[in-house]
Image (tube, rainbow, N blue to C red; front, side, top):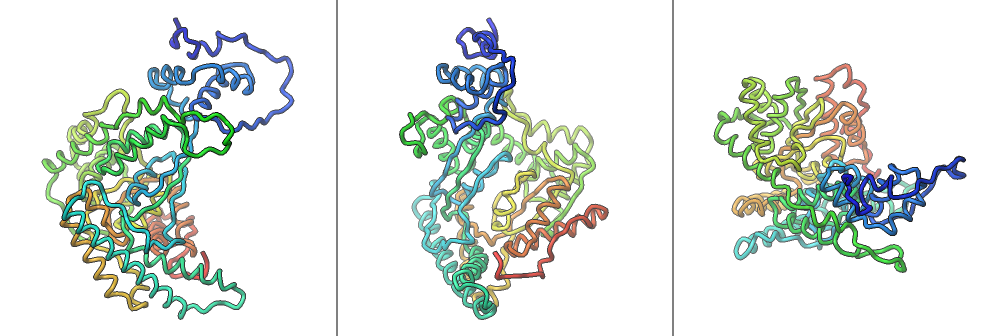
Length: 500
């Protein structure tokens, strides 16, 4: 019996169970568009297509009469042909989730999607998500702080818009509605500092079912109850007929029923975080301290030390440079100990941890959460974060002072941070304002550093990430002067506030 058995769904069956159709002439059409299919059917059809002399039309007809679930059970889950699941894609949308959950959803490197923008919509009446972990007095304190942040957001946004209207009169060649939209976007850029991880948003994504499985497994092991619930709900949605269909007359099929049965929580990732945190508490020396740079660039040359430092980064609150220098000074046995701790819970099915991935350059950033939320969407880099604590303070946009809103802004920020420190973690993180600073590590090659610096420094961007993108260029000029000169970034003092 072949590895696929005798059920007609195996790889051997793709070649032997049919009478091959060899064509003596070339097809009359070289490009054939295929209408959207259920993801698992699509994966089966294209997998068969690559292993048969038949046309795609014949392969699709074959799949109509054969069981794709048996095929995927055999080859995706049992025999590890994971690339097959890259051939089926799904569209999944998330509505009424927290901004925190949205960022966790978007964490996949192979991900395409869009989230609701805080630049073009007013969130003052949006309400907010209460994390399931909070009850009683904790929930009441959270509600009070959240309402105060949204009230301050509305007022600061109003004052910022008035200030901009006085400072930037409408050009004669600009239509009034375009002028108002542009000023509103700039005012929202300021007001958004008072939004927080708990505000609701929507996300639409397109992923392969392979990525979707990884996403479900990762979300199910999250420290946040809301995110774990979303992971379960994605699996349930995969097992059911789609909620929205383009062709209302077509027969409905479950999105990805086989995947739904196998997407168990990624226990390895969760265990590894706990084990590394415990190791760091027991073995690392006292922190060096000192003032943190907003953007620091390290080019690691010792690969094992780089991996050990990256693994420890998310389990501590230390700068990457400090961890890397420590690891570089350790013996090979000490570095191996960290790596072994990280991999101690790995099973045959688990991929190697993200800490083993990286790039030539490591940008360690102490930046506001709102800027991270924007930069986080860049897929061609590996991203790591430390626990949200609120302990690194918050940023205040210059326009807050210009608009006479400092007292409103500071009062709301301080109250939110004080309440956050009294609430139990990790649910307390939902109250973290977008203006609060946290520490994030972005590892990338030079091409991605050039792209982010050039794109995000443009005059249409948010002033926060524009400054960060400019600093990324400046740091590259110091570390790699021959390459840094190639980055055509726009200095943050070059402005055109009426552009979007």
